[in-house]
Amino acid sequence: MRVHICAVGRLRAGPEKDLIDDYLTRFDRTGRALGLGPIQIVEVEDKKNGGMPAEAALLRRAIPDGAVICVLDERGRVETSPDFANRLGAWRDQGRGDVAFVIGGADGIAKEMRQDADHALSFGKMVWPHMLVRVMVAEQLYRAASILAGGPYHRV
Figure 1 (cartoon, helix red, strand yellow):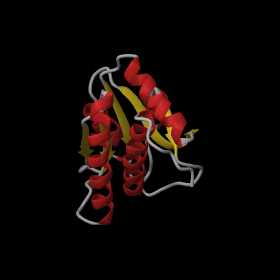
Figure 2 (figure 1 turned 135 degrees about the vertical axis):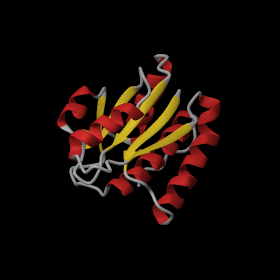
Figure 3 (figure 1 turned 180 degrees about the horizontal axis):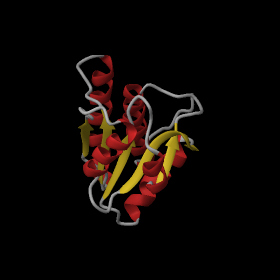
Figure 4 (figure 1 turned 90 degrees about the vertical axis):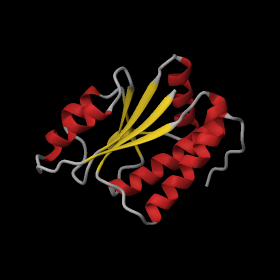
């Protein structure tokens, strides 16, 4: 199952990019044997400042046809890492070819996009900067692959 991180905004060189690159490299190594990956990052930019509706339209075009759509939103479901790993594994086992993790811009994700999603995932009730959410998604994808591979899981 191919994994896509579809996000508003461009990630520049810096600590967030370094962390994401590290976690995605780890995911690709672990996930390949599990039928997960590769990961593709698709960045979109609303250069006309059309707000959330315009960002949603750009994000929709970035998502492959037939993909499972998982939006990252503070109103979504808070899951443990093993639950997230099991959900990812279930999508794979159902024969889904693609999963898209969708990260909105500074104002979040348009309501219509949230309503059309297959799943909404939250990293807690707090609002996180969208660039940090990318890091957290990358880390949780790596952790999920590690859990599905039978590796040690350490709760912090």
